[in-house]
Length: 147
Image (cartoon, rainbow, N blue to C red; front, side, top):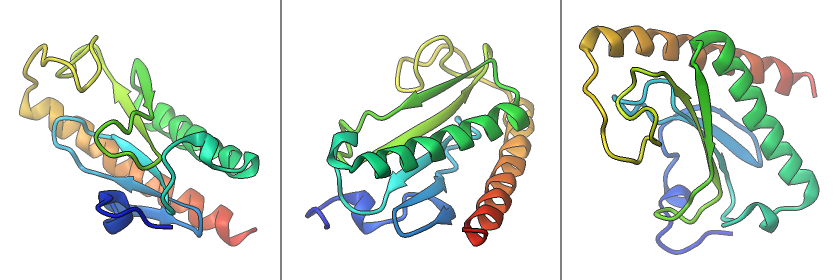
């Protein structure tokens, strides 16, 4: 089911890392937030409770798998999980690595900027993000083909 004028029904939302019949994992490549990943439900749904119990479990299992890989590869001090949907009311989860020296810490990334970060910092985190995207691709390709 598609909602009229829903950007996540009409577009992938970023670089496609993995997709199956229910959900997709994308890297939006937002420059100031290296490593940010989104898990997006393919068909239009606004809330987790719009999904069956089985589909909710699949969504959260995917979010947790991505979070675990993010922790291992990017070594953030914290990971923020968010399913706001205020601006885009299509079910999706943000998985956001956080560091004490990122642009918004300790506020959410949608809060007021707290500091500027250097190009070296961005480059270092972007390299980790590239490794993360590759790890997610490899994991889901291997595990999806085994099911």
